[in-house]
Length: 245
Image (cartoon, rainbow, N blue to C red; front, side):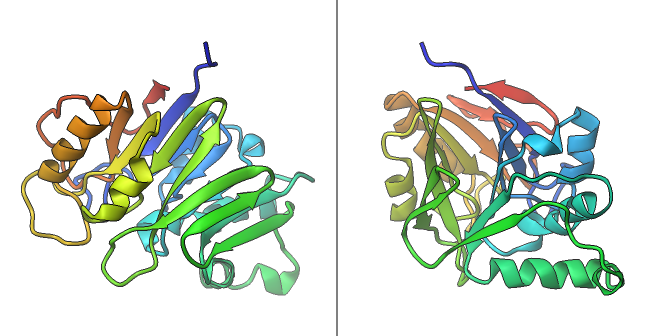
């Protein structure tokens, strides 16, 4: 039997949140799926060892998915140091934007010589395909999120195939992403029916869940603007909770 893997919900909220922290998922203490601005204090509360984080996957360049990066890098400027690289994967333009954000957030630090005391390795996604960072391969698939470059991903870790949609409306690519996976982490922005083409609602997730459960997939929902009624076969993530996959 495969080793069980902890999946920690650092936050489960959408950009327009009802009080939930912004969406961020930590897999096996090593892989972060999106890093919103509330993720760092939540990691502190939960006693997460920043030194164990190896990969950060950014699905798209919206604030609630990546504005935690300046706060994480500040930790490595001031409090933390390590020789092993931190690998950050995401859409084209991610590296440049990350340092722009850092300079906007802390405009004086680089001027006086502060730099993160950790090697940073960026892998930028230019389209659908496989992207490998430090031995971990993310298969990136474009999602339907307005006109933005947004990528769901799937990857293999300790005998599990894990898929994460990031932000997306219901579309054919979601089914492509989730086909045959062991674990599916879905966005569920709208707790009731919605006509929003860039996000999923309860109807979309209910439909996906029926298909996923039928193929034996463990299903989680996050990125919620409110709490929906229970959906059969779906674990609705809660801030600070640990789930086992």
